[in-house]
Length: 309
Image (cartoon, rainbow, N blue to C red; front, top):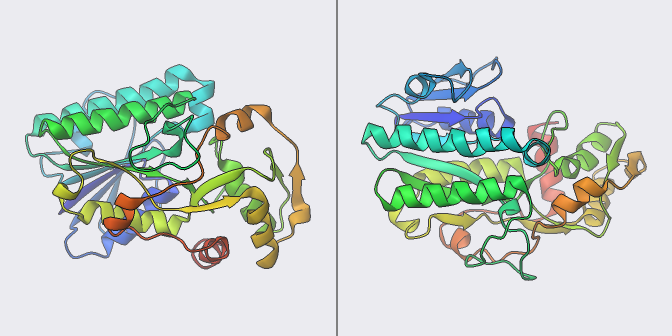
């Protein structure tokens, strides 16, 4: 795995993964691709800025020597719901053209695709590795389509695909984004930094979450695991922690944050999206393949204070 391409490499997960991979002796070159400039690159990394669908861009960012592609580039949940055409262009067309380009290389590179719990929609009370996807949002549908594309191209031997359905990542550093789940980080991050924030959902809402540290480690581990462990269905639910919003706020208070900085103003549009996401999982495949999970909400907050605050 000498040359790794990370699309969406300017995002916080892409940057964290690049930093982790740059410390490895088996990685000689990392290409970070995104739409915005990326300053302060980690060692071994170079940045390419542009539109994935622009003529010649795929050949530029994924030359024949690319061994692995981590496809993080996406229009997030609320953005894909608000702008259907943009979500389809980025989340479907961009992925499909990337896969067709990699197929043309004839080298069967590793392709790691990040899916989401949004791919499920209506589910039984507890989701396991055999629960079917019935997405109830454009973003969820686009992620589910991506899973099928990765799996079929792997079945045909064009790529060595791996799909991780990520829990909601908490606590994301930086500013809020357009993801419907953005509040899940905001209700912790902002009060920990003495800033007011809004929670648009009920205190009783359960969420399936994982820390950036755990997800970064999972991405790296997914690249290292043997291909035969992923077959025949190359999609797994990543291990996480189930907590309610109220339990998150209780942990915030234990960590020294001020819950009084949270404004509890409902947003029906956000609730309509996140309430379709499952929150309780059995992750037998993830556990058997050696993926590690966070232990508690308190640990997730401490990770944020150590890594990103």
